[in-house]
Image (tube, rainbow, N blue to C red; front, top):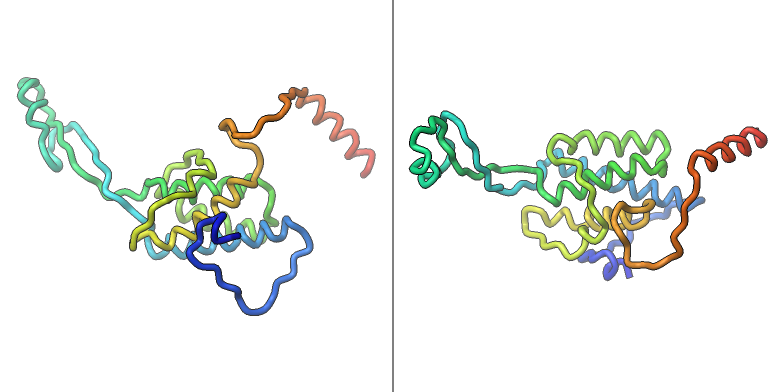
Length: 196
């Protein structure tokens, strides 16, 4: 079932056993495992692709846009087109968004959260934080340069699918509801203070 649902090519049973009292502990252990995989990959180097860029300035970089220069003869700056080797690709954006959502979720205790934060800091300068849906993690094509991303994206799919509500519309129907958040919070604090 795991191989089908998360499109893993293989599933290995490890030696020994683990003890988890709650589902939260399972989530936390998976989050730490994902963070370690991301940290290991960021130490090796993140997956990069050549991205098409264009720039305008006093120096030529790459190929000159000749048609633009011919139309704008009096224009001093040169418009050039070039390719840049960037890590800000969707593969890395999935990882950074998932780590960010895990840090916000409250799943992890402080000791585990440090591992997740360390992985997040290792990748945050390479990719832009962009909201990503769980469906983005499935049906991806991998090559020899990013094949180790497959298990990480499988874990990302798991977390993005099961951590809280999303900013996009879903495929399920339900009765819409509205509540006064300020009033709800006040009632929560009052009840919590009575228990304490």
